[in-house]
Image (cartoon, rainbow, N blue to C red):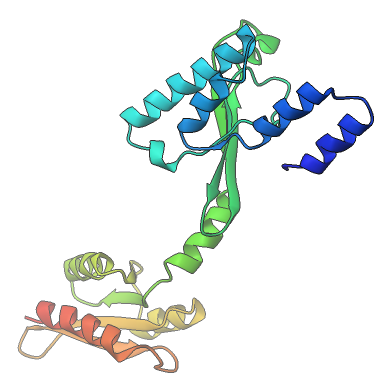
Length: 234
């Protein structure tokens, strides 16, 4: 946290000199894009800090090469990290949520604790948080179970592929069983709709859309499903 009042408390207690207080106050606000690195160069006067800034500039150069630099914010006042970090350490956030989803860094000496030193970079990600955000951001449009009662069952593959292209949550029933059992399976697993594929009397494919519960979906979405079904009912 950027606690400037804490810095002034340390100065008042005689722990920081006036010069150190001003320096730390400036460092506290070294937060932002690539320009921050240039500002930091004017503040440092020791080889360790100069090497650290050079390393950040090199890393940022690689980010530019890969086109991800616009997603990066530098915070040179950040003092978190672990003792084994030997260079850059980073955290990943979802901006709209303010949610930390990953962190990591460089640790060239850590592996040496188990053998020979070796350059290394690692990170961890919070899959639970990511999945939680994805569920809110991209809700399934409609869940559909496709039950193909014809001999080849190849039509179900094509229908499922087309539905998925349009963003529907489509799955195929691959178990050979009576249609009633498949329908019960859909209800048990809260799948909203079943597409039943069968042969009509004249040999053409007949596709039926059946709701497993209360039909409360947007009619526009259902029309989209029916349009796809009609295309394959030939």
